[in-house]
Length: 290
Image (tube, rainbow, N blue to C red; front, top):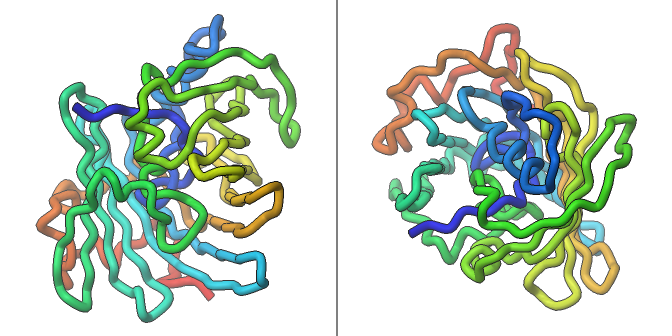
């Protein structure tokens, strides 16, 4: 049975590629416990489809910089989500696709595939590999999948403010070893915007010794009735020293577009005739980003 977990260190922006943790939700009543806050985050993902283009800038401690540009979409299938993304830049990774079935149902395991254009092969991503980095960034593949509040113990740390937003502060700790193995993360602190349950800041201890992961969001705003941020940063610290840093800049994000069902069949991966490849929302003319 799949164990679900909660540190959606984002992003945000959606997908196996960009943040599930960015979707709006039907607000809960005023939370009485930290579990209520966790449920608010968990339930943000229900009932939407989305599209976005993301530019990733990845830097290491030696000043080396690499960039990635992707498109990412998602569609709900009942209470479950289907995520799909494609790399546009750089050329050596272009047309690499990712596809995930993100299950909320008990007894069903998440499924993740990657399509590699060079070999024209569709590869299963094993559960043990979900902690590997997303296109070389500081985000893990598994962090893009929605998690269940029941897999975390928690305690309330109080309330505060983040970039002018009122937030709940909670401490969370995975209550099963499978989640630590899956994500490579242990306990951490999450700050959650009070009315939409958008996680806006978090810091987690990694499973690796003396390593931490810090997640920050910027430029919060409403899009199609969904409260999101259009930039999020993830940094990896080792012994207190920043060893890598990823910036995710989101462009053209839209929700509730009525995306076609046929795009969300794993058999459509690598299909050069698929209209999913060339789709752009209204008023977004770019095929890629500079």
